[in-house]
Image 1 (spheres, one colour):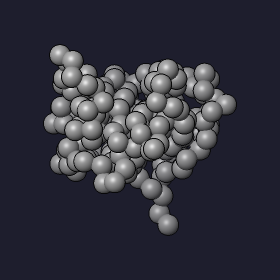
Image 2 (cartoon, one colour; image 1 turned 135 degrees about the vertical axis):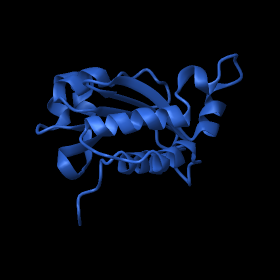
Image 3 (cartoon, one colour; image 1 turned 30 degrees about the vertical axis):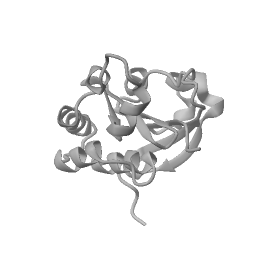
Length: 171
């Protein structure tokens, strides 16, 4: 069985677990890593019941004054990505689209009914990064948005962060 849970990403001088926008899961958050430029990645493990409410990425973006991003990892197979900027608003896409389609089952709705297509998501991601003060190309983002997990979807999520300019600090 793979990992189920959220990664919460934002830039703040305060620990994200102290912010009002995340107060509902404050006791469940653990710092996963700090990235360059004040970016923080927090983890909130959760089962496959999808009943956990981490909070609003819009509220988190407004509270921090910077773009924010949630990644909900589903059994290490795929990731729902929700992002928002204080100015640019919210958008949603997914990573590992084939696996996500399998999770959705066979009803009449498709991936495109729920998630932006990779090119549209990359366009929104470039704007998200620009609002964060980063100038990033769209091609690496499109590559991540169309990739299969190898072997875990979490790796795709962290590649997406790198592509957005939320980079690892220098070693």
